[in-house]
Image 1: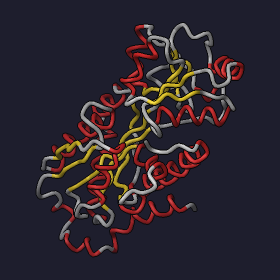
Image 2: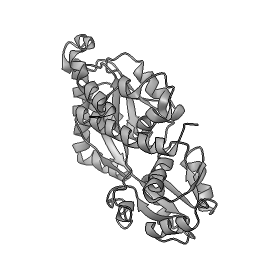
Image 3: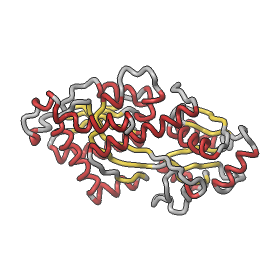
Image 4: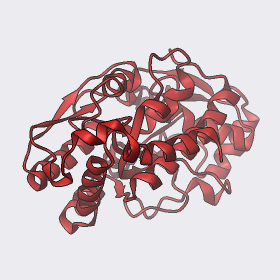
Length: 325
């Protein structure tokens, strides 16, 4: 078992023996005051929206306010560090997302360790990106794109929302699996790159499905393939990249984390309530409307998922020599 996977499994159960557990007299006593969910990005993005979906559910079910606290900066590291250093009592949580796993490799001098200092609580959602091009781009399929890229090696421009972002890493995985070359042009977010893609100054970009749908319906962008392992309900007519590149899959995720040593009783309460939300038909529809899929798990299963996810993308990042800007 690799180090990341083993450590997250340990954190999922460590609270049972933690001295902090003594501070919780009864599981049903939590929470007795408002709880903060820290989000590492500004309001409006997928991570923030996910927090604002699960927060009201937890507030209603647990009788205390779950307040969304946006702490943008350093690709989510500012929020993650604040939670890592918070009291492990269940009153400060982190909206965990894929970037936290990437950052474990991208940032070599963090003042905290995501794997050691954040305990997995509950997964919430998975979502995917779609590979898009300008409608004038000559290739019509992923297979044609790969062939075209090999004839114009290094001449195609890839739009990225930043060094080490999902939009870059998902393209990097395709590059490594197919041997193509793309010139990476980094922007400060997907929104900053899209005007150049729409104008034809960029050739290709990987963007969230929820972001892409409006452009695809308007015909201003053309989809090549989704990063899921198979076709998805939100874009049923768009093939998966895996149909052309077997084994290709790239998935975003969100969930809740807490400071290490948070009592097991608290983690169990939160995990149970998040999973109840993910089983609720109305909540599931709201998640699906955002182009995401409910992702339910135990805290231990979530820890195992994060550990394996972190290791997988660490290999991609190291092979490409990507560093945080």
